[in-house]
Image (cartoon, rainbow, N blue to C red; front, side, top):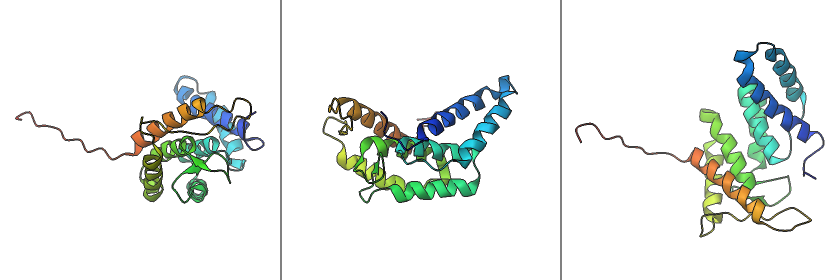
Length: 178
């Protein structure tokens, strides 16, 4: 089974549903009340512990929540960052590229509200742990297969997305005369 706290799977799915419904509201106004009911339910739920659900909660609070709740979730996320700049999938576990990449990706959507020191620490962790071939190794937590290929694939994908969304881009645009 999935390694999540009780009810976190339902909360995560509801947050995904809320984002989907919000995209359809211009086409069906009856969805507004349904979305608002779901927003109220998620807002009353505890902040998840699993990194993917916590990252989604950060995005949810940024888009649909109240500023004090966003600040609380952001403080929780910041406190969960390990000393080496990584995040762990669950509290008290070793950090890895998958959890760090997901959180870095989520933080990238906060704009000015994103804590620059947390982003820099995560980028530094990922730079230090990237393998020579450009990928990241993520040890599996699957007790059946014990193979790291799938977790490393997702760790690499999320790390690339997180870094790509948070690197400073220095783009020079040539003038027509050049």
